[in-house]
Length: 184
Image (tube, rainbow, N blue to C red; front, side, top):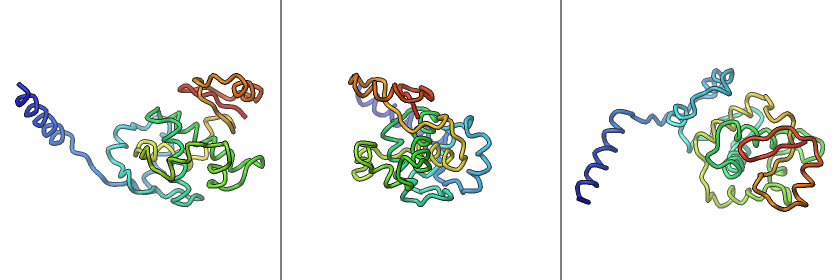
């Protein structure tokens, strides 16, 4: 019985790859720019299959290292969440870089003490960045559109420390999505 199950599984996988070939071509910056008008409605599964997760996507105004650092943070903060959750965290990072309250470069914002503890993923790569996350981050950085309403801070709603929650809740509420609340 086990032998037939294994054979069936292998045959199923082979049939899937034959029927749904996976392309590993990375999109060019021109192709990404053309898709920018559809930023909220692109088919993430289709894009995930087209993207090469090991190739940085060039984004004007950001070095490859900065884009990869942002991708790492967004991956760790949102996991396999939807595109909007990835856009929101990306917006918070970009808003901080552009705010006079924070350093004016990506690395300083992400490595500031007690701000993004998940930066450790950038150094250890314990949670590799998916192509879906990379695409969402790059689209957001290229669009210059802020879906977070100017958010500079966020916290996960599973936090139970009333002192931390109170600090956030005294700020201006921007939005809530996918178990995270955003403030400025």
